[in-house]
Length: 294
Image 1: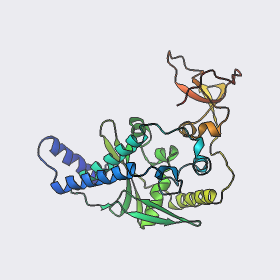
Image 2: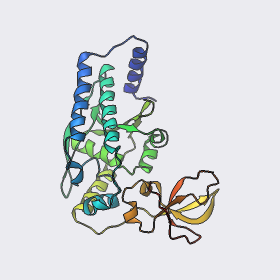
Image 3: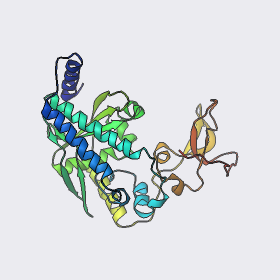
Image 4: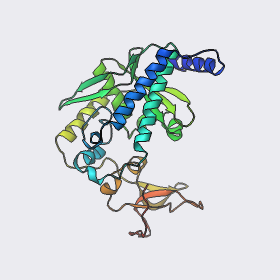
């Protein structure tokens, strides 16, 4: 069943497509204001990205990644030149989406800064919106994430290397309301949907946040969060070990896995096999003449 606001949005967009509705000057001005503030945030400080601090947007991420960000940030892969552009696109999607909610006569509380008190320190962040007394997050997604990650709560939680579940729980606790869910917007085609967080275990997520904050603030020794997984081909083990999706997407994977080799798939029969992050290759390969970075 669709979220009531999702139905209202589709009705407004259908009317707009057929020339039956318009957007007020006030709503348009609000979108412009939000995008302007996002531009200042993304391009206003050169040093901001270099200074590590725990915040609501990262406290749900794997502790091993946060450890590197705090202690050995220089070992990260360089950010792509498109990084800020991608972040800006996310901000634009959020600003336009909120404008569409307003144009659809959906009433909500706009973004506000909140503070979550943990056992070790206060964590700050700004939630996206409060709708029907529940905190919602707006996420701009890739086509893959839209179809394979933002399916339902359990699917999202099982593939949550960005810490979206803990982030939402932290916002809800700090604001003093329930966790609502996520508005996922496909950046490729504008499709959107609501994924509710009804199954979110608040106590479990808040404990996870407390544990993460303690681990980072106490300068605990480094520990990996994940182990390599066995590569298979039609259900049969190849003898090779590779990184899972969480580690493959991490910018510190080379520092974490000193024996990492990025090679064409050893089991694929394709003329252009995908690149795989191997940590063990059964035939004994230990060196690569030309290592490919992903």
